[in-house]
Length: 227
Ligand code: DX5
Ligand code: ZN
Image (tube, rainbow, N blue to C red; front, side, top):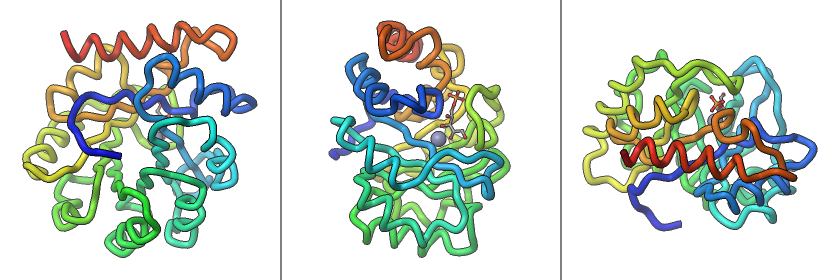
């Protein structure tokens, strides 16, 4: 997994057909997805439950590129090895998930994955200031985590700009998660984000037997950022 700041679209399978994850992952990659974003929720850190490491391991063979695992769980540390062994390329933990995010990020890298740190909308950019030399990705939540299809929180665009300045030349991705569509994507891309997670805006209108809308939706987001 080499580093570059080109725009990457990462569809979230939270909006996929849960009975067909393998085919959905293959379909979005065939339709132009750059990364596959996998939302793990525990019903404790966030008010919703999705799935765990066994599901990640099951879908891994159906993903050719980057499997980007977003952990919305607390605690995180007891599960890091299981997600790394499931084949996660990136494992992202929330700064709000516990008192020892620094230790968590060390453990993610020690397990052989790229380390990501996520910030809820109420958490300032400065929360990652002393973590920048130990992360590969900062995820800015532009909704409150837990559900797909929520409205983009515009105040977060300034946070992206602040993070972009803090990061400087460090090889750290800025990922945006929540409410990304062709209207909001250009705002965060211009502010310095390079990985755009999108669930509902990618999966709407398509299915595994009719995947062409996935491609059109991905292109619409990409084109909006280019134009
Ligand atoms: C929210 C998840 C997101 C979500 C995004 O808790 O982390 O990845 O799936 O969904 P949309 O793009 O529909 O806002
Ligand atoms: Zn996510």
